[in-house]
Amino acid sequence: MLEFAAYFPLFILVATLALETFFAFIAAERMEHAARAAARAAGTEGVAGAESTARAALPSWLSGADVAVGGNGQGGYYTEITVDFPLMFPTPGFDLDLSRRVEMPL
Image (tube, rainbow, N blue to C red; front, side, top):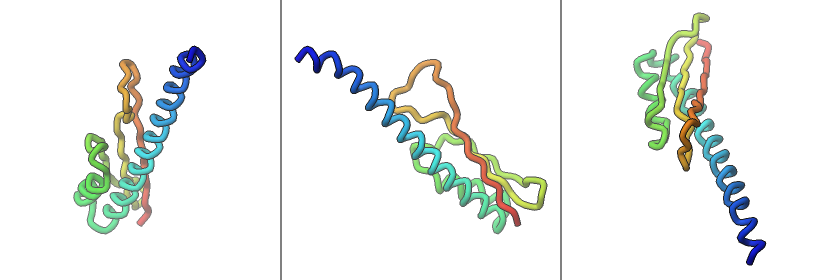
């Protein structure tokens, strides 16, 4: 029982870090997908339709993301999505942003 009590906090810490890392990778993957869809839409529908496409492609738990769409200066379009690092257990002083940028040529 004493060994369990000694190792249990360490186990909880490792499990929490693993879950936080997993959710960060899931958020990055979802943001990448939404940015690609928006950049593709910018090429066909223009910049106005691209932002709504990106917001529709994001899951509800990433709805607070900042979406920027524009021309990349080389005849194509870019989409950049930035969101606060999604934490299951918010920690004061841990202010990181996740950002994904996708450029699509015409």
